Image 1 (cartoon, rainbow, N blue to C red):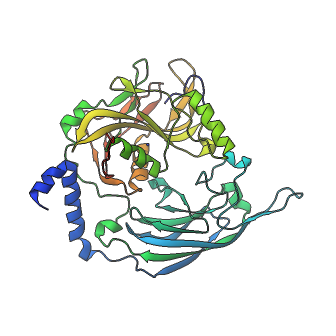
Image 2: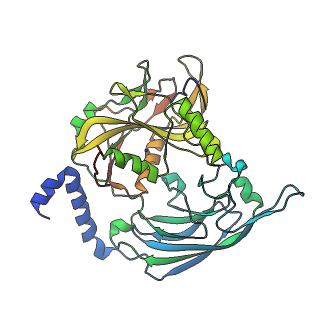
Amino acid sequence: MNLPRKAIGIPALAALCAMGAIGALAAAQAQTQSSAAAAAPASAVAGKSYQLDVSGTAQWVDTKIDLRAGEKIHIAGSGTVTYPSTDKSKPDQSFDPDGLARGWKDLIHDYAVPDAGHGALIARLGPADAGGQPFLIGAAKDYQAPVPGRLFLGINQSYKDAQTAQGSFRVTIDVTDPGLTTAAAAASGGPIESRIPGVTAALLAKIPRRVSDPQGNPGDMVNILLIGGKNDVVQAFAAAGWVQVDRSVQDSVLAGLVDSIEKKDYLTMPMSTLYLFGRPQDYGFAHAEPVRVAMSRNHLRVWKSDFTVGGQPVWCLAATHDIGLERDQRNNGITHKIDPAIDNEREYVNGTLSSTGIVAARSHVTPADPLTQAKTATGGSFHSDGRILVLVLKAPQVAGNN
């Protein structure tokens, strides 16, 4: 991935036929889940309650609570955490689970929930490396698990904050609805891998293995396919905590100014234009911590193809992880260096999207001509097992969704 030149810095047989391939797959999965229900033990009952402390010195605390898909809980926090002042002329900062009001100094930080209060009580479903997206709890929140997963609690602070923080939050978690009781509802990580009807060798042969830069130099690998409507794609990324990046440097300057005025984090720095099917990307999405966004971020580009599966559009994605800077071998300029193990980014996208509950089906497929080693358009090398991740989005189609 290269930087923009002007700046460096989402029933009946008849019924099955009408549903199409994706509908048939969903029905089959539902039947499988139903047949497994009797054998699946319940992990929680309505009325059960848990209590634990979240120390101010902690970044994340494993609650040891495994939530089922659809399980509803009420989380409430109390207590006080204090950040001792390093300036004797200024008082210590003490706060409740809602955290401290955001200030100008919070524009550049590495808090897990970018727009939540500094020091606020937060949570996450699933481990961070599997795509668990942190979200705000504050003093209280009703939460329904979209997919199965382990619940973690934390404080919206930096590692530096945690080193000197004093006090803790007392957290009570009440189960208000135990959720689904099927085996699939207890299996973490999203839907079980299965063959997706319509994703054939013939379809894969029509999709280029790589994208290219404006000069036609081959670059990043097409490593993910999404099946769903336009609105479904955008909403899925938004639900997973990805942001749609600015399309130009001018947009970037304006967005950065607005975010500064509103005391928000600027995460939408534009990415360079690459090409697939002879045209630039339709969307660019990024997932980054603001303090590192200029040098390190998870990002991807999205192109709508002319192909469909089960009546839904097929979107092609090239996902990479920026980990620093290096020399652009085309012009000796400075460009982003990507993690050469690009399958890690493919699975990061898999985790973040699957954790939303919006993914209906998923699979990894290997084309007849898998790409296992190559160089980016800027000269950096990368390697892969050659598989392509396929995710089917389950959001219902709406007008203008294609």
